[in-house]
Image (cartoon, chains in turn orange, purple):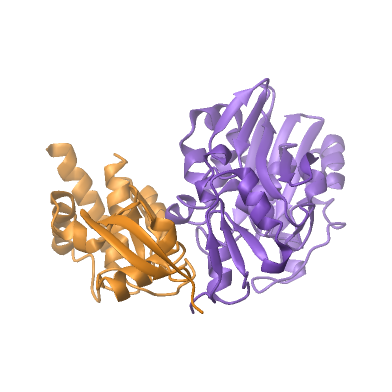
Length: 159
Length: 273
């Protein structure tokens, strides 16, 4: 019989209690049980970065963390970012710079970008590329993504 | 794919974890950062009956410097090591090498003890610990013990860790002011497992320690090259690698690994600081 456990956590500012199969990873729980399909599933072994999301302030792979491990955690997905000022500036920068085409990598890319920008790191293209090296994008060639992150850092400097 | 079913337990103390792991009928496996075990379970290469999640054990987190030694809890994450001033000052080799461990999101979860216990031949941590003369501390129901890194890594995913034991602490001597360090690795893309890599500790013109990873079935010291360096410098060390048990893999044949090891060694020496 499938093992289950009940977990309580905060997702995008809302308290959630749910009973989950222990073998379910966090991103499957968010997508299948809660309908938060913004986080994407790609490789399911931590390589592609499509499922990257924020748990307790750090970006992590949603496919390499079990949902039961998020008991008590604070989770922010791309849906949560959409409504927040921090996410809006990021989204605008990606839009302005054409930093996506098909959009499959974008939720993970945004989570990675946000961690970089919010750590106060510089608009250094090589450092940004290193930081997003765990997020595969097959459309943009990354150039536009780096442009968008630099843009956002520039705005912060002016503000 | 998705992981097969298992029983999940999250102990609140080391004693509780060890008692859970001692139940051999349950086929229990400790879960550290999960950045290797989870993919292995998703691929169904690993199918433990019971996962004993060590992430609730605060006693295994964090690090401190004590009597010239840096004592690092096994569940300390790479990102915490990279952010630590104590590490920057006392283990500069970590600063050179850890940015090459996978990607930022993986470093936010992956732990030093997990890498030690897994002993992936292409991982950086085992080679770093060989070069740094680190000691691995373990605990089981029978008690605690410590083993030099040199005697810990025995083969492909094979270590001196006994069933029911967990790695609790990694103890690394703080740098001496005379010591310099070097690191270089070849990977197809940044963050990929190394095709060949090397870590160095140079104590002076007549003393160095050289540790390779990604070239054999385990992280391995190049003792002949260390002696050759003393007598003939870097070119002699580069020429003294033929006795290492180079293994080919998906990325490169043994002969290519031998070549890359020499170049990595040269570049690591060029970059010592």
